[in-house]
Figure 1 (tube, rainbow over the protein chains, first blue to last red):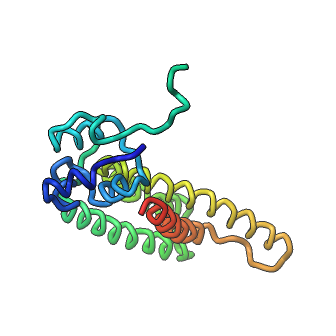
Figure 2 (figure 1 turned 30 degrees about the horizontal axis):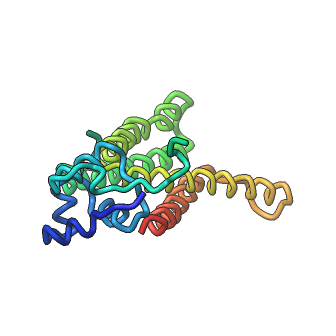
Length: 70
Length: 132
């Protein structure tokens, strides 16, 4: 799963710590998500999207084609 | 939502360390009392069970702390615990074999706790590095 979190955060000029505070997680969590090392669960994904006023699909992009309908 | 940060980390940490300090003092006192030859079997059972209450409080504090962590930190700690659990098992097995080979003295079970703590630290470093 790819994320636009870093770009969106830069647009808002928020630090990782500020975003972490807004959505109620640790800064380590934001770092791991931005680096693509950790995929958040749905509630956190929705929280992050809401923090930027976006839908989840605008923040996180699912790239696994194996589940596409044939 | 399960993604909440700690509310009062300093207070929680102070409480944990205070309970740990008192609990350790009770552990040492229990060990010292059990080493004295003057007490009867009933008293010795009470001394042996003395550490239980505060150790249960410690367990409760750790569980409460884990529940305060966000989902990411929970995953890191879960991996650290899994690594510590497995490495401690390996260490105890190997120690058992070394004991059968008469290379080492019989295992003091108090030392297993130290294995667990050290391996937990190693596990945490491995897990934290993986997600960096």
